[in-house]
Image (cartoon, rainbow, N blue to C red):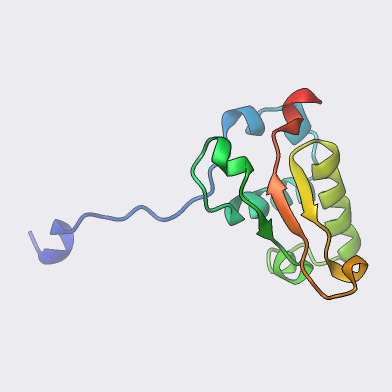
Length: 116
């Protein structure tokens, strides 16, 4: 057995989506862009599964989203609105042109989807 096989293999990082989100009617009814946006946003959360996951704030710019293949600003806006309306995310602090300071918007995942 060589040295490489003796080392423990590291699992690559992954984005966890719980079954209660994945199979919820609100998530299932999202457009493909909305689902991709949720996956991008969930990947930004650097907290373990559980309550703390929904307290973690993160920023995400349209430029960053466009790297994932969703480049039309109207599509991004529609996807974000979908996620808000379905209770999957919350906007903590608005950014972009509305903020007049070039600040990216702060988001956090939400559990409101359970009550919608």
